[in-house]
Length: 328
Image (cartoon, rainbow, N blue to C red; front, side):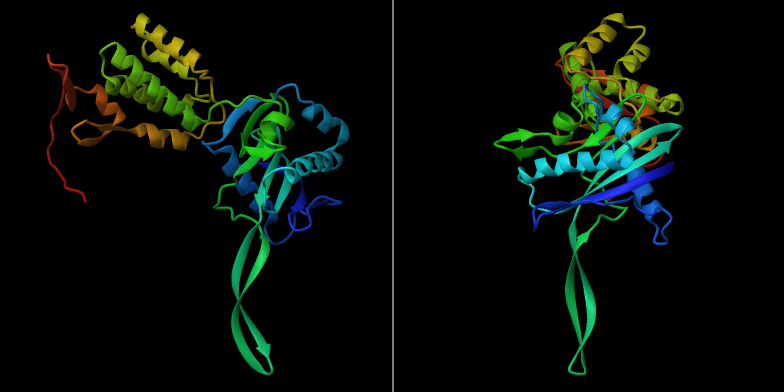
C-alpha cells in the first residue's frame, strides 16, 4: 500500500463549526502517522461487516479529478459537516481524506474518526508539594486496534465501494449520509450478511424438499475451503452452480432464491475470515445437543452419518472415534 496524500478536517461540537486544514499532513513525520493511517485503511478494507456497492450517479470521481485533492476534500468536508450540524450527532470528529494505491488500484478514502476522552495521570506541584491527579484530554483518535465505525473507500476506476455508516436523523427523517447523499449508491450486503442469508435460504430450501440443511451447507463450505486460494470474489450463485452441478432442480431453486434476496458477488473478501467461519459447521438439535464439525467431515460417511427415520426424525451417527476428550 502506498499513501499519496492525506488531509484532516475537524468538526467541533462545542462550537458547532468546522475547522478546516490549509494543507496536507506530513506523512514523513516521526511519530508514525503513515503507519497509523495505513493500519486503519487495511482494517477497513478487510472489514467483513462493511457494506459493498458501486458508485451511483454521483459526480464524486469527476469532481475529484477536476478539483484536486485539497479543494475536493474541503468541499466534501463542508457538505458532511453541514449535514452533521442538522443531525442527532452529539460528538466531535475528524474527517481524514486519504489518496492511496493498493494492489495497483487507485483509491480515495474518507475516515470518520470520532473523538474520545482520554484520562491520564498527571504529577503537579502546588505550593512546593507534589500532587498526583487525573486529567481528561479530548479529541483523542481511535487506536489502530479499534474499528472505525464510519468510513468509505472508493476505487476510482471500477467505482467499487466499501463503506460503513450509522443512520442519522436529519431534518426529521432517517438519512444515510454516505450512501444516500454523498455516493448515491445502493447498499449491498456485507460478507457476513451474505453468508447469514445463504444459510437461511439453504435451511428453507432443505425443509421444503425434506433434505438435510447440514449436508447442503457442508457441501458449500467444503467447496469454499477447497477453492479459497483461487477465490477473488465471493459469488453465491456461481458457488451453488459448481457445487450442485449434478442436481439441476436444486441448483435452479437455490439460484432463484438468491435472486429474490438480491444476493450479489462480494469483492475484497478477507480470506482468513472466510476460512475461519467456514471451517466449522455448528449443529444444534431441538433436544439441546450441540456439535461443531469440520465442514469437510460432513461429506465423509466414514466419520459422520445422517439417517432419516420414518417418523421424520434424524439420527446422527459419529464413527471411527478413537478417543473422547471432555472439555469444560
